[in-house]
Image (cartoon, rainbow, N blue to C red; front, side):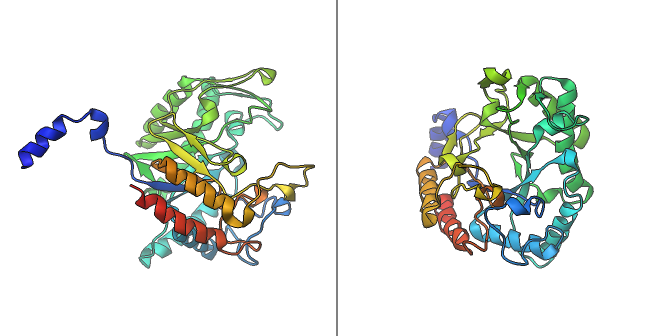
Length: 333
C-alpha cells in the first residue's frame, strides 16, 4: 500500500507536490502615537495608549491574539529615529508574557517613509526617491538591518516571523504621485545580498504592488521591480478587498472602512463601516479567494479610521468580527 502511494505521488505534477504556505493573518500595527494624536478619527480607550508602557503593549498583543492575528507588521520609520525606546518596551512586555506561558502574535517589519530612508541626509520636502541608486539602496537597507538587528542584539529574534526560514519584511511604496520615484530589480538583489552579509540571515521581501510597474509621467515615475519574493496591496480599507497574485503566492488585503475626517481635510474620501458589515464582507471575499496570506489594513491606524482594535467609538466589536472570521479563514484549508 505504501509503495503504491509513493508511485502515485511521483506521477503528480510538481505544483501539486509543493507544500502550501500555512494560512497566516497579518495586521499593520502603528505605535507612533501620541504623535499626531490630534488628527485621529478614532481613539484608544481612555488611559489605554502609552507606547512606553509594558501593559499597553501586552493589551494590544492580547487583542491581536484574540482577533486571530498571527503577525503584527510594525510600521517603522528608521531615519526619523522614530520613538526610540518603544521596541525595548515591546520586548519587556513579550518576555513577561513568555514567562507566564501566554500566547501572542509574532512581529514583522512594515517599512514606511522609504523616500526618507533613500534620502537620509536630505530635508523635507523630498522630491525624488531613486531606488536604482546604490547609495539610496544602502540607505533603505539600513532600516531593514537596524530593525532586525535590534531584535537580534536583544536575543529576541525568535519573536520575528519567518517564512521558509527567512525574516519577513513588507515595504510600502514611495509617495509616487508626489515625488519622482524610480526602482528596478537591482535594489532587491542588493537588499538580499547585503542583509545576508550584515546579519547572517535571509530576507523575505514583500513589496507593495506599485513597485512591480507604476508609471506616472507627470512626476517622471517609473518603478519596475519584478524580482521581490512577494507582493501585497495597499488601499483595501478604502477601495475594498484586494488580491495581489504576483509573487510566490497570492496575498489578500482587507479593511474595515476608511475615514480620515480627523485630519480636517475638505471632502475626504471615505468608506463607510456600515456597523461592521464592510469588514464582514471583506473577510467573506477573502474566504472565497482562499489565499495563504491575508493582511488586515489596519490594526490601529486611528488617523485614517482603519483600526480594528478596541476604541472609544466601537469598543471591541471589530475584534469580535475578526475573531469569528479569522477562525473561518484558517479552517478553510
